[in-house]
Length: 219
Image (tube, rainbow, N blue to C red; front, top):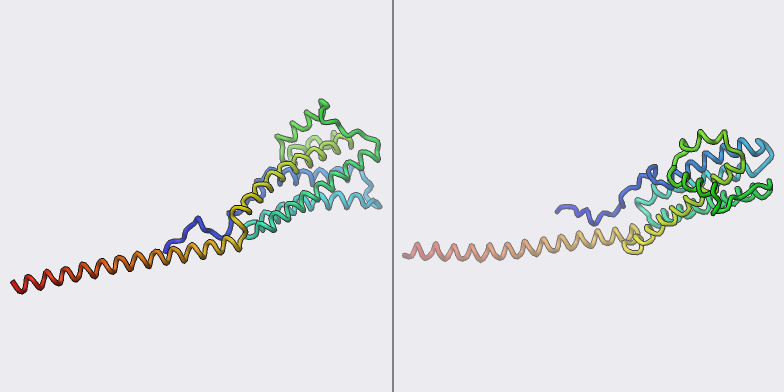
């Protein structure tokens, strides 16, 4: 009996390194490390640990969710939402920094924000931003990371929507296992019925041949 690939229990593995929102989350993490080193005290400020950990949690939960998603859609969805929560927390930290240091959160319709959003939209990797870091002040970097957080969250929301739709339509691993077992049994039953029909046909044919031979012998 051939294995039916349409009833695979495990989902196709996702190459998380290729996901645009993972690449952006990695850029966010590395930029946050740069930001903390440049603009926050090396010691005595818990904000540094909070921001770096939130940024790391964002990218790590994307990795873990994508890895676990091959066997459990539920865990994948849960971990990706944890990643979203971590990046939202990080975004709030940048907002707090801007407010407490009397800096400017660039308006969405401002020319420089539009340029920044356009650049971030088409650049996903830290290597795209690394040459600019040394030239940017804290206000520019904060607005940069906030923009990346917004774009990453939007991409993740669209991705999660697809995952949830697929989960509702196809179920989790238990449902896929049940479908695979049921389908295999149905295949086996259909095969047995086909063999029975073929066997009956051969019996009839054999009886007909016997009669023909008997008639020849009598003649």
